[in-house]
Image 1 (cartoon, rainbow, N blue to C red):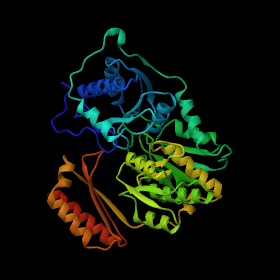
Image 2: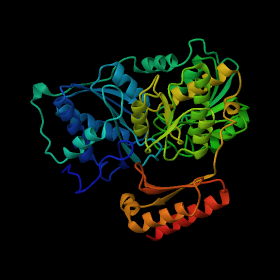
Image 3: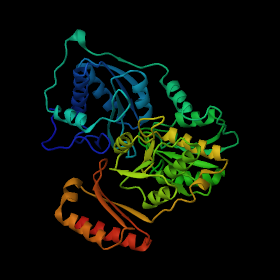
Image 4: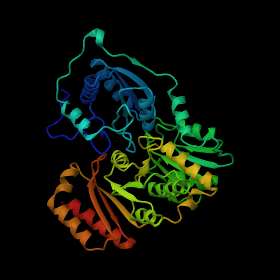
Amino acid sequence: MGDLPVDFQLFGTDGIRGRVGEPPITPDLCLKLGWVIGREVKRRNGQYVLVGKDTRISGYLLESLFEAGLIAAGVDVGLLGPFPTPAVAILTRNSNADLGVVISASHNSYEDNGFKFFDQNGRKLSNSHEMQIAESMNLPITTVAAEELGRAKRPANTREQYIDFCKSTVSSDLDLTNIKIVLDCANGACYSLAPTIFREFGAEVYSIGTRPNGFNINDQCGSTALKAIQAEVLKRKADIGFAFDGDGDRVIAIAPDGKVLDGDHILFGLARVQQQNGTLRGGVVGTDMSNLGLERSLHALGIPFSRAAVGDRHVSMKLTEHGWNLGGETSGHILCHRSTTTGDGIVSALQVVQAAWECQQPFSELVLEMEQFPQVLLNVPANNPEIIVANPKVAKRVKEVDRAHDECYRVLVRPSGTEPVVRIMVEGPDANLVAREAEALASFIQSV
C-alpha cells in the first residue's frame, strides 16, 4: 500500500500532478507523501509546514490525507484553506515555516489535483530535494510516539498579511480611481483576494469567475479560456482586464479592445518601463516557449534576453544565476524578483497597472513596439509523452522540420510536465506555413 509503480516519475514541471484516483493522486499515496514530507522536514530539524489549496472538490480529500501524514511524522501543520500558490510562498518565508505546500493542479480542470512545494525561503524545491522525496516514497510508514505527534491549527490574519504584501510591491501613492478593471479569477484561489486588493487602490472592479463550487475551476474561464473576460472588458469599456489561473500564480492581460496581452507582452512592457525608471537589473529571462519577437524587441532596446527551460522554477533559477530581477513565461508566470520568489498573478497585475500609471498611458500602448511572430501551439494526447518525445523517429522528424527553414523559424516538441500530452510549438514569420508544419508534425507524432 502507498508504493509508487516502478519507474514512475513523481515530479513534473511544477510539482506533482495527476488525475484524482490515479497514481500519484490516490488516497494511499497522498497519505504517504504527507508522511515522507514530514519525515524530510524533521530530518532537516524542522517542525512546521503550511498547507494551502485551491477550490477544487478533491482538495478536501487530499488536504486531510496529507495533513494526517504530516502529523504521523511528528510535524505541526498550519491549514490555510483556499489560498493562492504565491501567497503560500510568501507566508512560508515570512512566518518562518519550514516548508510550504499547495494542493492544486493550477490551470487543469477539477478532475486533476496535485502538490507544489516551497522551501523556507519561499522558493520551489531543487531537483535534488525532489529526488530525495521521490526516493523515500517506497519506505514503509511509521508513526512517532503519541506524545510526539504533530498538531494542526489555522493561522490567524493570513489573508491580511498577503493583502499587505501585495500592496507593498507597488508605490504607496498608486491611485486607480476612475480606472475600470475586469478580473477573471477562474473560480479559483484568487476569487476573493484579487477584487479586494484592486478595490483598495480605488479601482472600479468588475469580477467574473468568483463563484467556485468545487467543479468549475478553470471551466471556460481564467487564463486558459479568455473569451469570457474579453467580452466583459468590451461590455464594461474597461481600461484593462486580468485573467488569473486556478491557483493564482499566472496572469494574462486584456487590452481595452479585447486584444490578448500574454506573458511575453507583460515582460516587454515591464522591462521597458523599468529600464526607463532605472529599476531593471540586467536583462530578462524567458523560456524556450517565449516568442522570438520578444527576444528581438528587447534587444532593440538594448536589454539582454536569456532562455530557461519551461517552468517558472527554471526561470527563477536562471534569474538568480544572472543576478537579474525580471523573467517569466508566455503562459503568464511572471517573476518579479525584487518582490517575489515565484510567479504571482496579483503582484504581476499590480506591476502592469503601476507601469501604465507611471507613464500615464494604457499598458497596451506600452507594448505596441513588441514584434510578435506567428506561433502555433498544439497538444497531442499521450499516456507516456516522455517516451514519445525520446523516440528517434520523432527526434529525426523535428530536426528535418527545423533544418528546412531559416533561423527565423523555431520548432519545439516536449513532454508536458503538467498533463499527459506532447506539446508542439512551431513559430515563424509565415503564419500559413507555421500552421501547416505544426499540423503535419502533430499528425506524425500521433502516428508514432
